[in-house]
Length: 128
Image 1 (tube, helix red, strand yellow):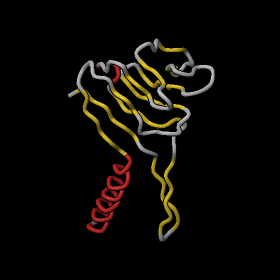
Image 2 (cartoon, rainbow, N blue to C red; image 1 turned 135 degrees about the vertical axis):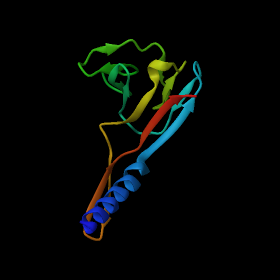
Image 3 (tube, rainbow, N blue to C red; image 1 turned 30 degrees about the vertical axis):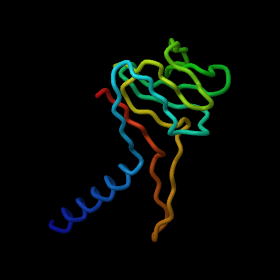
Image 4 (cartoon, rainbow, N blue to C red; image 1 turned 180 degrees about the vertical axis):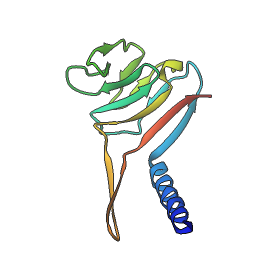
């Protein structure tokens, strides 16, 4: 039983150590201009906010706007594409959430026993 508990905590520690490596946090003030440049070269950025999942497109039919999970364009006058950087002109409570590259980038590493993989960087933005 002791070995099981020890192995469980070792696995949990390993998971937390490597999964947290791809998470960044940013605190912003209400109404502040925010430039999300963490995903240079991305074709789109997915965010998960209170309203659900939304994808901001840097190219294609929906360039410069967010689209929801149903493919419906979201009112996007507060957002702009500035040379591949998502600019939120006035950050509000509706923008609080996690932001990541879309489609997601998987970071693979070679280990002694094979390969390990974690999702690419995620930026968590909150109001201060």
